[in-house]
Length: 195
Image (cartoon, rainbow, N blue to C red; front, top):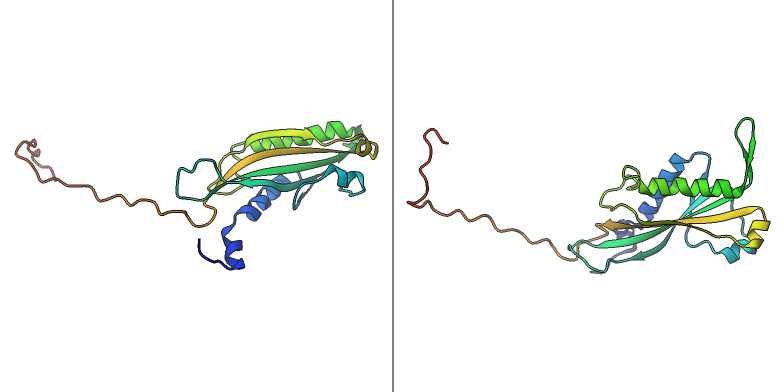
């Protein structure tokens, strides 16, 4: 790797565009839920101390990035762990309005995010050189204090492999041209009219 300017670093990394593609897809699919990018982990201690999030909302963050254990090509690949934090509260929905608990809404939203991650037509987020999500799971982020405030927090996480993240480590090997052997007296004769 050679020295690079900040502009070159911005141009070669796929992480920001990837997070934006996930956020944009979820925003399109769930128009009644606020979907925003988040710069990192939502810590339950911060929530208890007073940080507030609009409900219902989904906050998409990149929680972890690591290279693969085994590299099978010269391309740079990374595994990205995404965390989609779901914030919900009790809410009246429908016409006539019916009251739903934060548990019902939170589990329904998490289930919908998992369904998107499992869908091969949606889970590439409109990007190329990307594998399907792996290790998709949901966990509640609940404490008695947060629950008493009237909100509930969940997180859906998954891992996804991005390929072509910057310059290749090595150039692919060029295959030599095929060897054309001269004809042998033992070769079968060409059929008449053959080109």
